[in-house]
Image 1 (cartoon, rainbow, N blue to C red):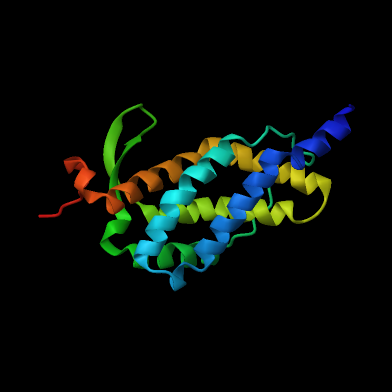
Image 2 (image 1 turned 45 degrees about the horizontal axis):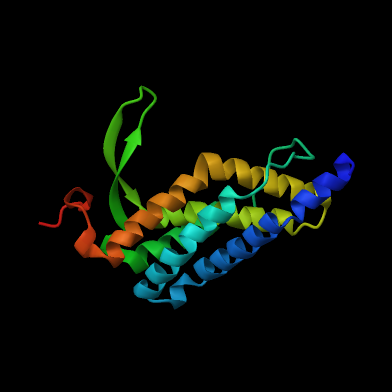
Length: 184
């Protein structure tokens, strides 16, 4: 099998097609989040977040055909609308404590937002879907390559953090004391 044939098989591989399917389902749900209750959103995300992570981890390494800056399709306004919808639906449960590291390697507690995490994941998923659907082989290669890179550097950790926070909303009796912002 020559290199061109191998590259074509990557963008149509089982792992890419399954990721495409899960990413599409996630984006469709998030785009219609305003139509769902808080409980529906939490229950859906508890199920799809681990699946998105798993399918992202299984994305093959692909070579970008065109070394231009990756195309972005989700505007700041789109991102903001997704963020606001989820933030309003989750209300006070949107924020949670997390540990962040700085350039000096120091760790500090800080507040994070489930809506922010999910809007970031949505942006990367939607950009992947839109680029992949452009139809050219180069666009598909670039979509897979970029999504794999962003999984490792960006949205993989965000989906994990959002899932953990959603877990404690769904099962508050198991929530560690330090997870609460200030419930007194």
